[in-house]
Image 1 (cartoon, protein in one colour):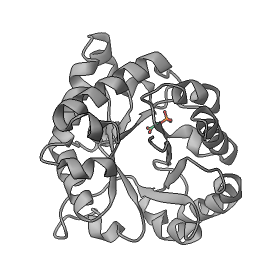
Image 2: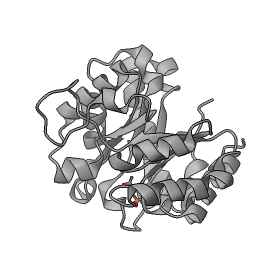
Image 3: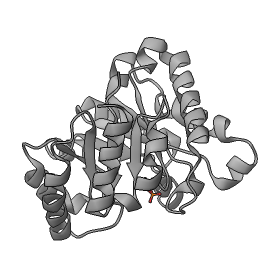
Length: 255
Ligand code: PGA
């Protein structure tokens, strides 16, 4: 039985002070909802404050990116070791980073390995573009991204990894993938992991859907057998919406 995981990707929203105020307001609404892993991913500058505000609670913290090197002349970058003690999860391979910051599959793989070496858990985002989707290339693109991201990662690390399937055309557009399409693609991702690592390992890996997830469509996603949670942008920025997403995840998975 996989514990569902709902992660709020705040992107470039909220100052450090706003982030702390937000989690203080959010906490009493979601802290006691059992059976669902709850994660917020603020901007780097807010991680210290948010991590302190959430210490000793059931709400976990994630970062939105990382560099793969230990340290060095990489102006502007954050090393995995700098995140240890502040976060449990780190989103890598997000389509906005792939698109605007030239993220490559090779670097996603480097980042995943670096995170695992530091005991941090990667949330690896994959997903096809609108054009790739229209050309019928979804499965090929997504499976290529998953295989590349997992290169040389041993089976025992797989339970630490979360994969987020986020069709690019569904992110921030309000044009979410239907639950059936999301389930199909996510089952395909699990099939790739089964091929690489065997069924026992693949059954332990949590795979989220992301892209215009809202309280109104959450239950349908979470009712799909292979969808283990959501990576949420816009709807994670409001206390009411994020609370509802977590409640609906708990209800749908019967926890
Ligand atoms: P969205 O973003 O929920 O605003 O579509 C999802 C994401 O980019 O993780």
